[in-house]
Image (cartoon, rainbow, N blue to C red; front, side, top):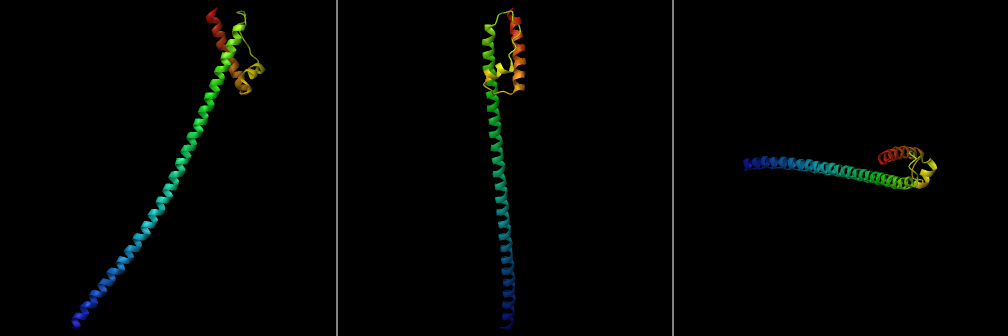
Amino acid sequence: MRMNNKELATENNTLKEKLTQSIKDNEELKKSTLKTEYYCQVYYSKLILAIDEGINSMENMLKSCKAMRDKVSQSHNILKKINRHKKLYSNEDNKINYSYDKLKSISNDKFTKDECNELINTFTVSLELINKKFK
C-alpha cells in the first residue's frame, strides 16, 4: 500500500506541475491576446487617421480643381468680352490695350493686378495675331 501511496503522490505532483504549467501558459496566451488586440486597435486607429487625411487631401485637390476651373471660365468669359469689344474697333487699331481698370470692371474684381497684366499681355498678343490673320 505504501508503494501505491508513493506512486499516487508522484502522479499527484506531476499533475500539479502540469496544471501549474497549463495555468502559466494560459496567462501568457491571455497577455499575448491582449497585446495583439491592443496593437490591432492602434493599427486601426492609425489606418482611420490615414484614410481621413487622404479624404481631406482629395477634398482639397477637388477645391483646387474647382478654383482652377472657375479661373479658366472667367478667363474665357473675359476673352469673349474682349473679342466683342475688339470688333467695335476699326482695323487701324492693331493693338488693343485694355487698362487695369477696364479689365477689372470686365472681370468683376476677381483677378489681382498681376493676373490682369498677364491677361492683358496674353490677350494683346492674341488679338495682334488675329488682326494679322484677317488683314
